Image 1: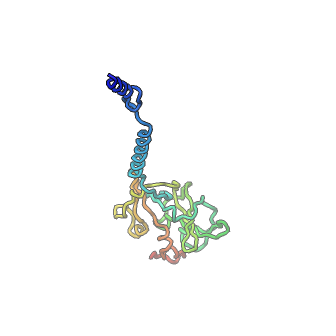
Image 2: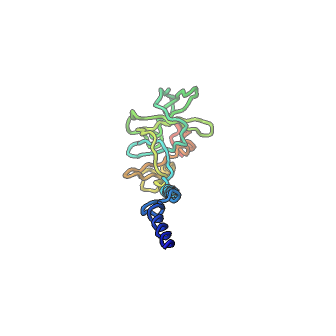
Image 3: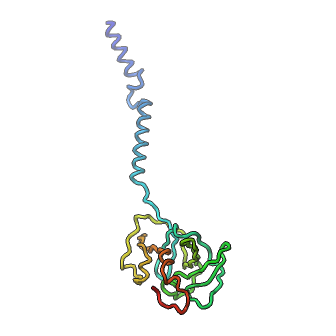
Length: 207
């Protein structure tokens, strides 16, 4: 009878007085383990869905083409300054500007590449490019400012871009962004080409 009472008492305590045996109760230690497990799973999910690396550039439009220049190639971007014309040079060399005490040559980039067929837009900017310790100013039309794209959107150049062959050599690929194609323009290649230094009106051939 005494043994029966002990068993009954123990049984009653196990079902009512011991909280860990109550249906639906989670031990605090178990709860911490569960939270830690959830945190680790969330972290793993974040790693697997990590955002693709971004490409940042300065976007602009010339004629029907949309271009983007890597931000790393540009030292500075400024509004179109007062430009002092130089006589006897090609039309695409706009002239000289005094920028922070330095004299820069400013080139109309689209006029150099294709020949300008329309006036310079109100949204034109001048980008400052450094090449081998020299600085150059390049006028770009219809500047949209900074644009960010995913590097995974970059595709190699092909012959469907609609550019002339002598211009395609300056294109390092293009980004597909919805219905838009942003052509990645390598301005340092442009500056390095011999034609960029042939500024006299008498030097008509590009090579």
